[in-house]
Length: 308
Ligand SMILES: [Zn+2]
Image 1 (cartoon, rainbow, N blue to C red):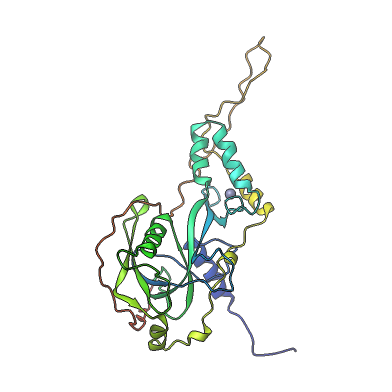
Image 2: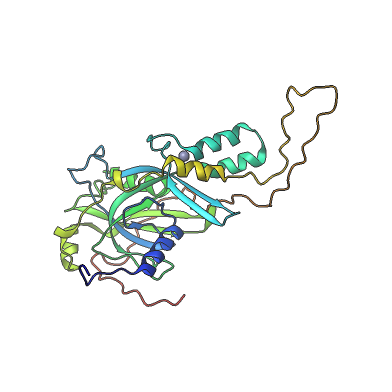
């Protein structure tokens, strides 16, 4: 009967998929992802591995579609091959078509089809808020942290701010832990990135203190974190995109002028459409003075069991 002693937890895997979808990470993603949830997240951005091609950057810019289909109550999140210069994208093409219609309702839908700019990094997470499933980030695990332009700009500024003494934040021996504070909601969501009050620290020391075997840590190849969906899948999603308004006048160009062009009855379309996907939108923030948070090598905060 083959090899015994193996199995899998289908339910747990299905739950994980749902969890990933809820947290807004795309399908086709092969990494353990982390984002800054409301509250404070302490991370250390890790340098690149020399073996990994990436232009030597500790981050990678990605473009993601995040489309909520209200009719089907389904959400499609995937990286955009056009934005990533990997190929054509039927969703972007659909968006362009809708823009070109100059119809207000269509343009509104097109706006929501635009890929969003995001940035990913290899990080360690010292602590952070629990997600909806009651899971808190775990120290000693490499995550791919995903941030929007607002937090990204602050991270890069910090990394380049030699005058303030916080440059080279990704150094293993003397880099800087970051405190990412997320406040507000929806369009008012703000991210504030500050260096941790402990100053420069050695990640290896922190790992040792945390009882983590650093030789087991493996960084992700940021170029390979996301796989773009197939052209067929993109076309399928694009085909289902509808404009909620019924005010589109059918084009009657070159119609015979003798009789009034028959006005095609416009089928009523269910009210609704593509409400904005609930993903944060960048706002400006003013760098706040450094606020000390939990100590760097603090043991993991045990996540209390949460009933949902
Ligand atoms: Zn696209």
